[in-house]
Length: 299
Image (tube, rainbow, N blue to C red):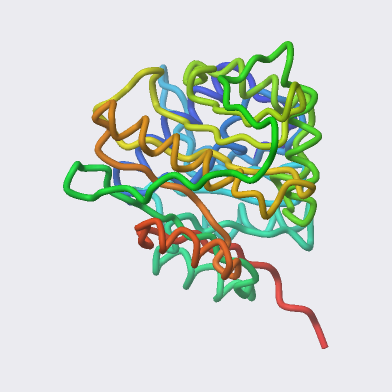
C-alpha cells in the first residue's frame, strides 16, 4: 500500500487510467471534481494498492482512494480485481487516516452501498442529480422581474468579480460542507481549468456590487452537443426575496436553449426541500443519486 500526499506523474496517469476503466464498467464516475483536482495538489492523502508487476511492465493499480482535506473519501477498485479484499483494505486504511470520514458512493450503486454497509457505515447524506430537457417542445417559465433596484446582468470578469464571488459564495453556502468553504485559491484553480469560459458565468450586479451568479459548466467551452451543468447558482442573503436567482436561472436556461443545448443538469441536497420544490417547478426531475456514508457511532 502506498500512502502519499503528492502523486508522481506516473501515479496520476495510473489513477486516471483506472478511473476511465471503472467509469466505463460501472456507468458512473467514482471520483468527483474535488477528487480529480486533488490529484494535482498536495492537500489530500492518496492511497494506492498495486499488484505485482511482471518483468518489463508497469504494476497494475488494483485500487485507489483519496482522503480529501474536508475529511471525505472517494475510491475505486479495478473491475477485474474485485471481491479479493482490495476495497476493504483500502477503506480500512482510509478510515485509519480519518476515522470520521464521509465516504462517497457515487451513483448509489447497489454493490457500493452493500460494501460500505457491511463495513459498518451508514448513510448520512444524499445528493441528487436533477435533469431538465431544453427542447423547444419543453417551454421555459417566463423570467421573473426582479424587485432589486439598479440590478443588471453581465458576464463574469475575474478582475472585477473574483473576490466578491468568493464572499457571496461563502455567505450563500454558509451551511454547506464543501461549497461554502471555497477560497480565492480554489476559485482560481477552477478558473484555470480547460472547461472554464467566462461567458458561461452570469453575474448579477447591483451597481458594481456582485449579489448573485449562475455558473454553467461544459466539458468543452462552447459545446452545444451535450448537456450542460448548472455548476453553482447563488445569491447573497441580503438580496434574497428579490427574485435575483430566478432571473439568473431563467436567463441562463433561455440562453442554453437558444444555443441548441439538449438539456441541463444540476446537483442538490436531498433534504433541501425548498430547492427541490423550486427546481421541480422549473421542470427538473431526479436523474441520479450520490450517497455519503460514515461509520456508525458506538453506543
